[in-house]
Image (cartoon, rainbow over all chains, first blue to last red; front, side):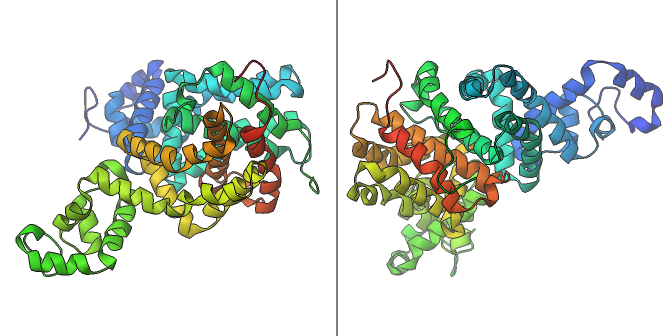
Length: 214
Length: 214
């Protein structure tokens, strides 16, 4: 039935084993690493708990025990992939709203320049683009942990849409530069991009609103 | 072997039938419609000429006859999906560079607001995000038909990167609004978005370059 070492029955029937395995600090991380690889390789639709368990060398029951449903495994994998991103808004706050544009720009380019942070983020974005459930989980996560927290720094009545258009500039740049790889954008010096993008991002966040608005 | 009506052997062995089918004005379009549906549903990797032929109710040999390889079918499907987009830069040119920002913004939002143009474009973008070959074909197509032609209107030494960052703003907005559907962006009035985005797009195209640059 399973490829778990020592194989066999469900964790619930084997409390001693389940406790021992659960006690290992690396197990949860290993499941999440396997989950990210599985979601990246097969997409949300086709990914399975069984394959995630196999990749982590654990019993599928242990995946359920830690995370519950496939949806919840995806949510946890997504939060791990975005862990470096999630803390960022609090760092930006320290230097005041006038500098958030440049900080956000440097931060997003930094995440995408580094394959170790780019690949997990890209895997999640791919899943979210291909599946409604994955899109919903992704939307809830970035709204709660990223967009809403950035909006609090902006302190304007239309802060939410401002933050989202600023993020749109950076997300679109990442798509064209790192995924589609159009030239010369794909080879442009990161400092040139910061110089071009930071004023635009800052304008979205704190610049004049369009006439007749907010 | 096939689901083609009248079934059976390859077109090359049946010149009378092949000619008759080829003569029907709708056949090529039907293959392309089927190809778009197949690439959208299964992605570039898993899409097959056989399934495209089945969807169009033709012999697979006819798909090869019209288009050649899977790569070439994808290229043709992509050009059809982008047909409404490809002619746009010439329209923008008529009103002069000072208005291109607003025209581009209205145009891109228009393509994404309408499901009939949005779905084919989204299908192609999904394929390009998931497969290197699809990404290359997509890159070549948008560079040749869209980015390079827009850059000619801008008439500045750094026109290419300017156009790409302007397009990045619009692509990122489309991702967040129509695919991930973050609020309030997803429900924002299109005119509000034009008012917010057009000045930014125009700035990328013709605004001051950052200090020390080009």
